[in-house]
Image (cartoon, rainbow, N blue to C red; front, side, top):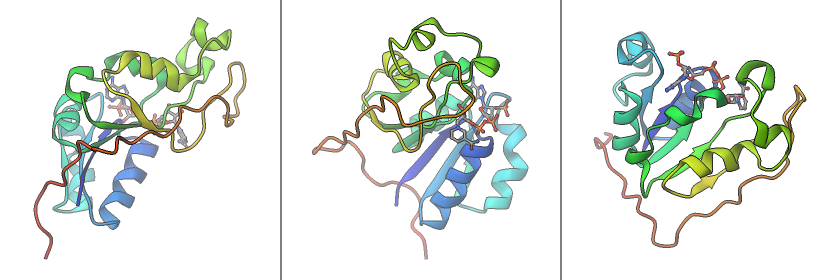
Length: 161
Ligand SMILES: NC(=O)c1ccc[n+]([C@@H]2O[C@H](COP(=O)([O-])OP(=O)(O)OC[C@H]3O[C@@H](n4cnc5c(N)ncnc54)[C@H](OP(=O)(O)O)[C@@H]3O)[C@@H](O)[C@H]2O)c1
């Protein structure tokens, strides 16, 4: 059993949390407004879910899913992510995120932008990444999957019956 941290607990973070619990893992969920705003949600998920700050979620998780609007990527708590498996769900939508020059000019992808901010290597890109100036995500320039053979992940958390 692993502990999955969600940085961002909107549509994507909530689905990741639900599926993770269903698969036998525990989750630590975080958002921008703080743990109190997630109390009802984690209660509905049961004993294997709890709410925390983004820093605590990153700290206590084995695997961290970043699912925030791309405009917030610089707020991802990098110090707590060193050596962790980090999964990037973010997409770039200029209308929502504001224009980011590196992405508009295709010098890098949204995952490469997040990677530049992180102290650890992004482990995978689960879904899609957005080309600039479109409203439709596509599979361009994904960051390759790379899980170290000596994975730092050791399953933690309460034992299930
Ligand atoms: N929805 C999809 O089908 C889908 C599919 C693939 C990828 N994506 C991408 O995945 C990302 C998340 O999408 P979403 O639909 O889940 O968005 P969403 O429903 O708007 O949720 C965004 C979450 O990020 C949190 N957040 C914002 N700033 C934060 C910060 N500085 N620190 C911690 N949490 C922060 C928000 O917290 P508050 O609620 O407190 O504001 C909220 O929980 C986006 O980049 C999106 O493009 C979405």
